[in-house]
Every structure is written in structure tokens, then in C-alpha cells.
Amino acid sequence: MSDFSAIDSAARAILRKNDRGGYTIPTDGLYPYQWNWDSAFAALGFARFDPARAWRELETLMAGQWASGMVPHILFHEPSAGYFPGAEVWGCEGRGPVASSGISQPPVAATVARRLYGADPEAGRAHVARLAPRFLAWHRWFMQWRAEEGMICVTHPWESGRDNAPDWDGAMAAIDPAGVGEYARRDTAHVDPHMRPTRADYDRYVWLVQLGRRLGWDEAALRRESPFRVADPTMSFILLRANRDLLALAGPAGLSPAERREIEGWIAQQEAGMAGLWNTELQSYDAFDLRSRRFGGTITNAAFLCWYAGLGNDAMRAHLERILARVDYGVPSTDPEAPQFDPRRYWRGPVWAIMNAMIGIGLEEAGLLDLARRVRSDTARLIAEQGFAEYFDPLTGAPAGGGSFTWTAAVWLGWAGPGGRDAGRRKAAGEEG
Ligand code: DGY
Image 1 (cartoon, rainbow, N blue to C red):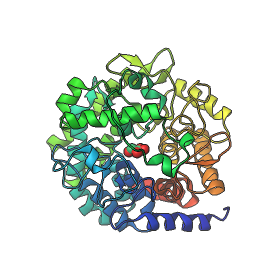
Image 2 (image 1 turned 90 degrees about the horizontal axis):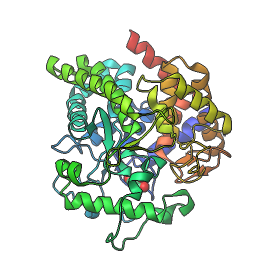
Image 3 (image 1 turned 135 degrees about the vertical axis):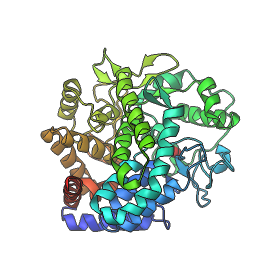
Image 4 (image 1 turned 90 degrees about the vertical axis):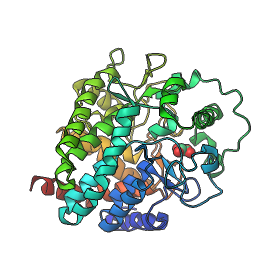
């Protein structure tokens, strides 16, 4: 596909096809429900051709919020046989208004809302007034339960959205999944097992779900008892960005002075805490295991979200340049010089369009325009040459994982494609005006 308007139409068709009436599934078969950050990116795509539908996506997502403020990583709106672990495994009945999982996911929704609002403040005002209190409660939940020394931690690799990244290897190795019992994976029926997490990973994913369930998804109990508690660069950078974006929406959303001060306090706490994610040996941001007090020890694409959070530096730029020089298509999810690098296996090598979008936006804002251009044009090339795959091999560009993927289509429409560039410019103009 080289005709941009044909790619635009194909991307729109994917969003329409994956639309289940108010929420969008990531892809049919492999992921048949509403996933949290997938949904926020879907809104970014819808914004290009149906802004009302984009707002609706954020509203259905936030409608799944628990009383605690947590917004689950999966909302099981309609039963579907093709996915494991389903609602009955999570055991969260009655916890939220919609059947759900018991963990969250990176909070990109407030950032997307800011962009939607910037494109059309008049139409957006009522939406931000309704949504901002929910974002606030969600971010407060993170700050209350997941902020450790100003870093934001995850209690399950699935919560980070980067399931089998090397970041979790140490913490995962410390789990003995004995007693996890028999279960049947469904993901490997949809996708080549070499492109998915291993059996050893999956035993631990399921074991951690069983632990959460046994503890009644009580955050205080999880903080006390779970062996898996890892400060995550994705979560930390994305929440910091989201807090800034929520603060920018405070005026139109009608948040009170006390609420604004509360958000400012979170931002200060997070900015101070970021030092804890700096691995001096690696000279990079890195995941930090709060139980063993050890770093992950591998550079992943999560570290390059630093600019997105306004915290880039020369060492990170040098790493990005080194890594981009080694691959035809950046940004690989794992450093190609690391022993864990595996170009097809999910978060251990492949390129993910959504990560590229956030990395590229950050680079552009930081004035690193050559790098920003490279990341954007690699993303556009991958999609134009290979279609809307879930992720791509950084060495060959080969598509991997699920196909007809919502967030890849959305990233084309909202950022990587030529129309996405215009949308970005309109947004910038709206914010200045
Ligand atoms: C999966 O099932 O692979 C998801 O990433 C977990 O939400």
C-alpha cells in the first residue's frame, strides 16, 4: 500500500470493524473485549473522522471504573469463548459496574482527552467536565496504591501492557508457580507461539491472578504480600504525562483549586521519584524491582518514553541513536544488543506502533526533530508496507502477532500517517490559541 488515502480508508475500516458499539476491541479472536490503553489509542484514531465516537470510547472505558478509582485493564462487556483468563478466573464480580479484570493499565486516557479537547474545545467541554473527575480518581488510586518512593509500580506484568519485557525477568524468576494447576491458553491458538510469551511466563501470569483473587484484589494486601512489585518506567512516565495533561484540563473541566494543588503535588512527587528509575550502571532509565531492590538491567523502549514525560537527557539520546543504527525499523522493544533480544517475541524485540507514537511525540516536543522524524517515518513505513499488525520485526519489518489491529490503525490515523501530522498541528494551534 503506498497510496496514503487508501491506507487511511483501510485504517478507518479496521476501527469500524472492531467497534462493538461504544467500545473497540483490539482485534477479533485474540482480544475480544475492551482493553484499557488500547481503547484510549482507539479514541485517538476515531478523532480523525468521528470525534463524537472518540469521546464515547473514553466514556465507555471510564464507565468501568471501580469505587476505589481503579480502571481495569479489561472490561468483559460481552461473553466470548476465545480468551483466557476470562471474568470467571479474575473473580472480580461486584467490584465494578462492568465485569472486569483486577489490575489496571497505563493511563493514557487523560492525555488523549486533552488532545480531543484541543481539536475542538467547544464540543469537548461537556466531555472533559464529565471525565476529568474520573481521571482524577484513577490517578489518585495510582498515587495512593502504586506510588513507591515517587515511582509507579505494577503488580502484574499485564498491568504494564508490556507482558514479557525483560524488565520483569528477575521478579518473575523469584515466583514459584507451583500449584497453579491446569489451564488452557487461548492466545497460542490465534498466534504463532514463537511470537507470544513462554509457558514459564504464562504460569506466573496465572499464578499472580490467582494470588490477587485470593487476596480479594485488596491493594493493601497486595502491597504486603505479592512477590511481584516492580517500579515500571512505562507506568511512571505515562502517569506523569497524564497528570500534566489532566492539570491542563483543570480549567475547562472545572476542577477545584484543591484538586489542582493535589495534581501539582503528584507531579512534584513523581518528578522527584524518577531518579529511582535511573540505573547508573546502564546509564539509562530502567525497571526497578521493589522486592529485590535490583534493576532489570536491560534497555527497553519504555525507557525512551522519558521525553514524553519531559525528562529526556543526552545519555538516553545516545542509547536511542545507537539502537536505531542497528535496526531497519525502530524502536525495538528490547535493546538488540541485549541477550534477551528476540525480534518476533512480543515485547522482547518487536516494534510497537503505540510506543513509537509516544516516543515520537516526546522527541518532537523536546526538539529532537531528526530522531522524531526517524521514529515516525519507520512507523509509517511499517504500516504502509506490512499493514496493521499488532507488532513488527525490527530487523525485517515482518508483521507479527494479531492482524487488523485497532491501535496500529489508530496510530496511523492519529500520528504516523500524513493526516495524523495535520491532526497534531491542529492540536498545537488549538492549545496556543
Ligand atoms: C494477554 O492476554 O496477552 C494480554 O496482554 C493480557 O491482558
